[in-house]
Image (cartoon, rainbow, N blue to C red; front, side):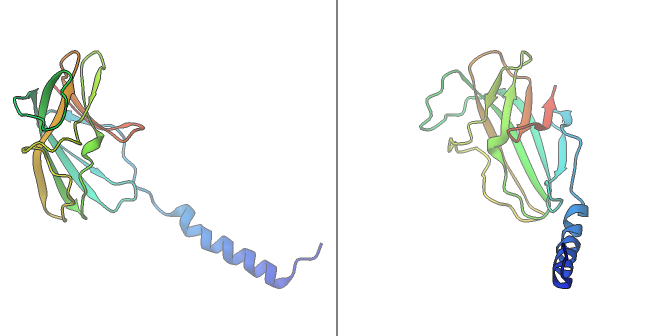
Length: 159
């Protein structure tokens, strides 16, 4: 079988174009990033463009009301602060869980428009947003807060 000169050039062009894709650096972190409640944990997004930090503190029962949400257990809260260190950050509030020692996990009430809740609005580089995140605790009391992307814990704040 004879391969024409044009075909060879086309194959070479495709191969050369693919090289930067296969050797491009990717941002990796040793997940999870772990700290104590009250500490600030820093991470970089998966493509290495955005650097952000979260501080989660004061995990405790809450007396705040949850407008329009039928609470099944006891509302717990934690104070959350997100910083946009490099690039703009849209707070991924829905990724938080409160976790009890027996591993019972309580999803964040991201859909509740509580007056003191942290905003999910995008913040520009160099700025921060603070507020509370809430959990409906229906079992053992939580001692830990995790940030989980659906596949793995990214950040963990413990006692």
